Image (cartoon, rainbow, N blue to C red; front, side, top):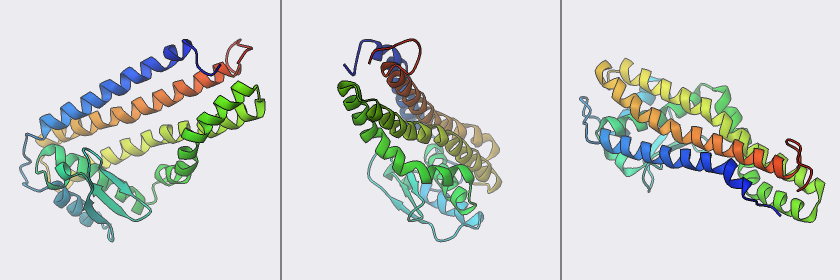
Length: 231
């Protein structure tokens, strides 16, 4: 009752885009990992330098296991870099590290979209799991209240993926500008560092498109989109 062949029509485009984005970011990172930065700084050193030059204090920079598992945790003010990025001295490593430092700078400067994303992150994580289950149960039991509750919860997850886009794009813009202004990369190297960040941004675009398409499918199955009357 919950799924139908039409599900593939909604989801396959997002799945293909996500796969392409994942391959793109991995191949781009691998390519620019072979190009050393003229500054000779590691990703960790570049991140600390950018934070210091930006007047951002009290942020820890540490390693985290995994490949491209880099992230900034605003709750503990910790910038976590994967081993390849933390220790790497390539343009790829410096670019990714600078991007995460950009999030720490956003946090220090009370960047609105980042603050909003932090507010919706818990409802979003709840909505991505519980919302899906409630939608399925509501459609199976023909319980309209459960369907609406599930859609509301899953919509929080969709909102999270959408608000993530300007947050990530802004962090990348801050990163490239700061790398050049501090001299960590030259103006001729900036374009290559930006290519790494642009490839990474595609994964967030793919996630947002996939989430929106899934929500549209749920609305269609519930009879809330188009002329469909059956769930």
